[in-house]
Image (tube, rainbow, N blue to C red; front, side, top):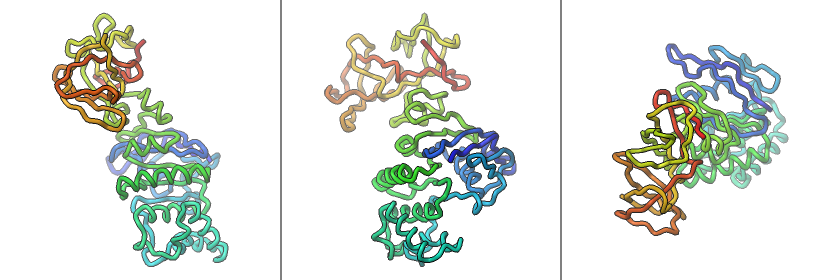
Length: 351
């Protein structure tokens, strides 16, 4: 089911938490709401759930406007950050609880609970209580409970933040598997760009209540609309340096680093330059750098060097053995070079 927001706004006293948000959550897809703390992503989720009333704007589930509907009539499944399991109940009882609230016959509720437990692969834990489960298992119980009602929309609020690194990786893969198997439209709130990039079909990047960009994960990474989006996506983060444009060439601290810049969309002489770490490649015809630090990360080598006083990180294929103190020449791939207006952070297109 497609979800549509039209001009959705939420104001708490004097704070605009969500500002005139107009977006579409595609039917059957997993959309990540991504941004730093305080950007409005959880507030947006709670308005979708009916837990917050919008100050203005409309919410549609398919063709039905649900802006004023109470949570229990929206057909949503909600998974909180803290799981909110009942400690005195077994796994089975926790999953069955929302079904019993709507008077589903006990035999039918038990069958649905087993089906949902099997879907999230905890069917062998049905008689255990939450205290006997790991964090990842508790999260699966919470998801099974949310799915038991056969909701139209599944809402996940920072569902992995309480798990350790290994469990976060495993559980996010499970969330993606479950979403694909059920085909349910899912909204996933997170501040972790790696989580969002790994499982989302679409990402909505937010900052201070405003939508910055909406796109598929790789498109966001390759073609950010502004400096904020470029900096928020990527690990290690993008290098942001100050540069000059002279005679169609990009100059940083006196180095002619990018001769392919022919024409800027805006006639600026001083620009902010974003260089993705993976944009660098060893090239005898490139510009010279002095390596200060080397770190091996899997198949890649992460090096650190300076352009003038500006620190830079770059990935170089580990087949080349590099050491601190070494001087090498590098060039840049076009895909990883972004130019921003230093006044407002907007992307500047170039040929």
